[in-house]
Image 1 (cartoon, rainbow, N blue to C red):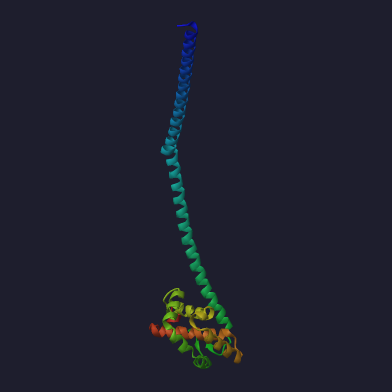
Image 2 (image 1 turned 45 degrees about the horizontal axis):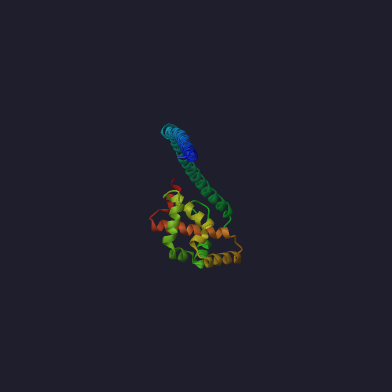
Length: 222
């Protein structure tokens, strides 16, 4: 074999060995990198694990405690608001009655002496306006409204509720045409509308008392 061929074979072998060594070295570097990445991953998992097991649970307990405090506070505030609304409702009822008593001091249609009642002119106006018929036609609905508005079932509170409904919520118990008819009647007779609000309120009270067997004299028993 010639020296040239031998040199060629040796050169090729050296090249192959160098290539193999380079490849092996690259594999070692990759392995070290993978190992380092694996360690980092393990460290991250441990951190997350610790957060979930200790810090996270502690945080959840704190949040749950704060939420319970908020719920208790809201519940207490809700009760306070309910009581305030009840007090305002009661004061409003008294103010409405007081206002309409003042407005009707000189009314020829009602007697201010307790229990309030209609005069002869008031009864005549009620009859001409057919207020009793209007009330009777919607009595079931009207009675529900009175029950909702009254603070209690005693005669005085029922009377208050009836006057308030007639004064502030007339459209709930009479039709638009019926209300317009009362307005025209009041205008024709030179009376303020408040006189007729009280007439309707008294008729509501009397009908409620009659349907529920309540004595009119019980209004003064509180």
